[in-house]
Image (cartoon, rainbow, N blue to C red):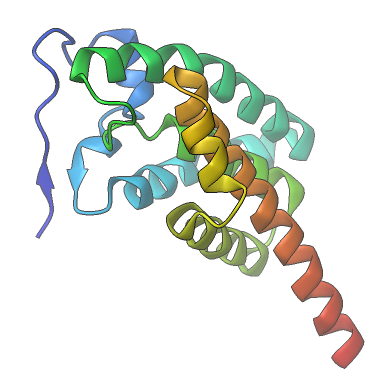
Length: 166
């Protein structure tokens, strides 16, 4: 059953860093806050992708990454954690990047979601190495962006195999 996690006392919900870091509260949902954050990014991605296309979605990914470095850093300091699980802006920036690179279809975006979550949860090298190497907001954000690149490359690889076999 889903439940909500309380915010750090020094950072109220409506503080811009708390809203951004938790993606308007999605990161407060338990269990699996990263999955909730990724799912809650989809309505924005659908609207942005439909209205502006992949380049605008790529811009949104970069904007979420840049703002996320600040918001994640502030939130994690307030929570006194290196990588607070409530922070899901990293998943948002990363899934925007994945979706910008993949075909704007239900199948493409569904595959992108599962591939990204797979690499974000598993964290193979060098994803885990980046997570350990960098601290603060940048450290919170960068491992998810690398997981996004793994998801994109995996999609291209699997799509190529599919085209060869069919």
